[in-house]
Figure 1 (cartoon, one colour):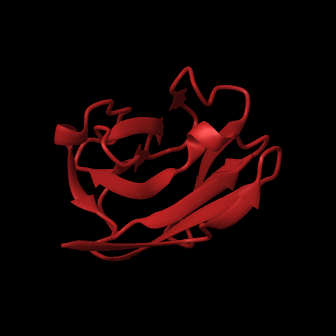
Figure 2 (tube, one colour):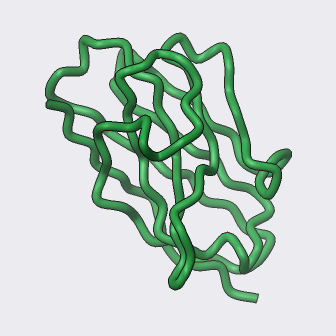
Length: 124
């Protein structure tokens, strides 16, 4: 089992920045690919970014490309999402997730472990 705990969400004005963190505990010795997802009210959960176990390869949804950066520190068992130039449409609950595959994983169904979420609200 892997436990994931997100932090860093909050209220920010449009154009501002936030940095989300996701601390992993439990069976962190396995090589998990990881991702960030978000879900806005009334909408489906969507992938925001993903990263391989080693961290050399990343993926971004078109809507966040150039503004968000995913990274990980395996020594600290922590995943990050740096979010810059935030827009009101970025408002959502953000979740980190871990997959048994060490590669990039695009679908929520490929992730077996999820955090409880952290709310990001961007005001206009």
